[in-house]
Length: 253
Image 1 (cartoon, rainbow, N blue to C red):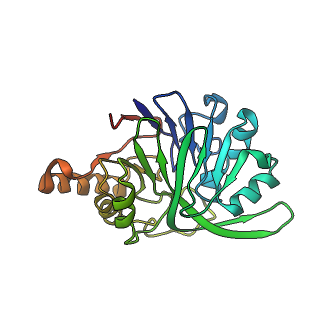
Image 2: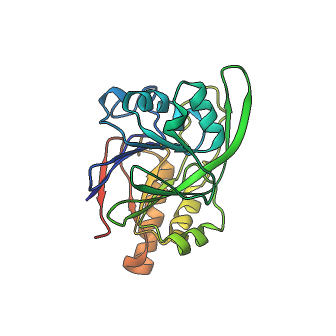
Image 3: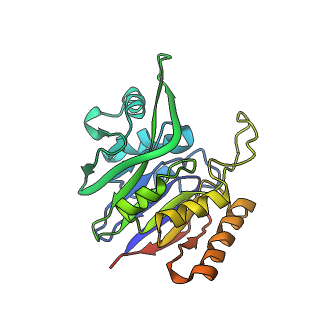
């Protein structure tokens, strides 16, 4: 059975049925709601970084240097990680469509309608493409990680081509940072996120991009998916809403 632990915001720890630990978008040590800090994590085999925002990659260098973790990310994020001391040999740079494999895990980056901007220690600014991921787990389970994407119609194509079983879906934005403007919506509204889950034909839709599930957007996302299930039966995606630290288990077998 694969184990998915939600660590707050967009961070997930996936432990496969073979015992591999895959960490997605680690932002723990500066997150007051994170259930664990980096020192308490198990040995991480593989880190997937969707883009260069601090709340998606802040703890990546610390973990990678501690554990020798392999990293899959985009080019601008790779350059930032190298600037932060991570050996280039630990990093696999990819972009939309270029399937790669690390630690026996096949990963296909897919389009994420978001930006990735980083600044190196010398002041150089770099922009790139945010990545979504299709993650192929050893038991055959396919996981879609949405990153911070906005809704786009090719999610239907991603669902048709890759047939993901589990989606890690950004459904809100929880602004805990004084230096950011007050956004009226997240990159996807609850309705848009629920529609995306339907287009992707997910079995389970795991909500994320928040620090506390006591959130109007999260409740609305769950309500909409449950309404879809009332109308369409068992084929509609099942919502999974957890507080940070919560665990969801799934295997396609």
